[in-house]
Image (tube, rainbow, N blue to C red):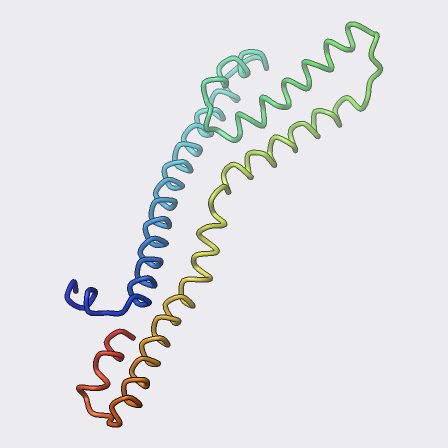
Length: 170
């Protein structure tokens, strides 16, 4: 392998370097995402248990603050905080009711969107890499075939000794 690598041209080495870099990046993101999703699922299951076992919303909110990786807990906290804000405003009577339950719903939808965005972070690199790398590899193959045809033209012959280096790069 190393003999083939050092015997190849700079274009082939560059293409291989790009492909290896993309592969390392994809494997790193895939492993990090697997761990992130596992933590999120575990903490969300734990939050759901807390949610159904608790007697009031304040208890759920207090115990959910430790669940930093749970998207479900984040959405609950956003709704709870908006509900608390509305309750304080109702008691003060100096701020009109601007939607009540709809505000809580909007706060929870905003938190949901933020959590989905957080969980989808770096997935665009995987999608782009999956779309682009076959073409980068194909470029390397075409470059090797072009080198083989160039060698045939320079040598004026199409025997194996002339064609083999370009084909092996391809």
